[in-house]
Length: 506
Image (tube, rainbow, N blue to C red; front, side):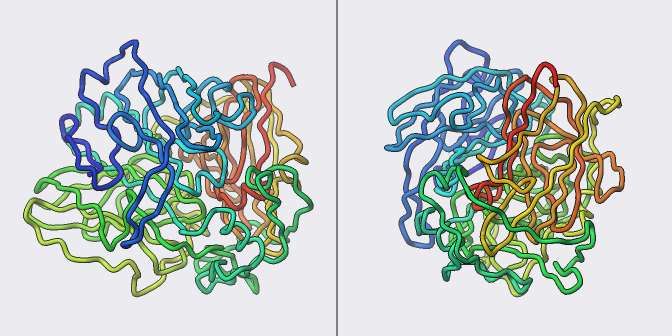
């Protein structure tokens, strides 16, 4: 069971993803580092065994740190292949950021590497920075609790979302790039099977050494709610996965989290999927969105909120003072598939929830209405902008190549900045797919949506819908090479990555 108690940690069952539940003394600052292991594990997915990867901490998959506790971790690679782990949402020294050869090499099988940096509070996660390994579920929650979390009278629940295929990632990528039968149906919104893009083996998997792009013209901010824009249609779901997982389980055997009558829940949702955007639907349990990507926002009431790959949502839920069961569902955008978990009081009847809904969920935030409603509780301080730069996001399903400023990784031109300078980056998506753009080593604030200024959320991953533009502001950090890329794994695997090169002078 993937829960934390209302006044501390509850020992959890091992039936699902278990964020590390360490005794309170073990969470105090001590000299001993935490041991984290990249290893294989076996899941039961709808009655079929699946061998996947994972990141095991002292109490299960993932880590939980207390306020003020440093991220002091010894990472051991128990896999038979080399790997490297990125601490998504944290800002370590660049040498500890976890990108292959920037600057540290992959960890060889059997190798251990030590990490030590100040942890940033919030809902974060950790994952391999090799796309095919993340697609094999080499990822886990990374929760850093705040002083408020410890004092609050509420139960914490983590919902860690994945998409999954029984096929190898290489086969999945080849089908997407070659237009095989596994390519997504697009949920009626015009997706086409990709054709003719060779994946190029392991170098392609890591986003290296690619050829030319395809791009599609369009007009910013003209996308409608249904995923249509004039005679053009956005491309959704370019792969139909075998299963959609919440805490390693499907709705045929969901995690049932025991809750109290009238209790308050903090639900930490992490979208660790390779290529699936989800809507979180709390149904009859009314919720408040209180944080995104680990940063507080002014609370928003509702029962449906979306998040793209790499993003996180924190929802507060006040349960009725009655016995009952409340499904919390993750709906695949533009499709009928869904996954989720169930909050249930002791002894409540838990009814089966079908993994396929009666109707398709809509495309996610094509008009940026959700993003526009988010207001940071602790915005960046006002200061003059030292550097502004537009980044054009391009690509097409035919051929299946995705680019930043018309280039793939290896042919890219770095985005440059001076350490300490205020920078505004404008992501202009000229393709018919959405792109969750993630910047390593920095927190940014959303300050513009389709040319309209906003005092938006603090984030590290922002979703840019088709034919739209999102502006983000940040203060450039450590002078180093930081990755900037799309968090859609097939897009990253075909080269949709550049670098944010920070120097002491530009």
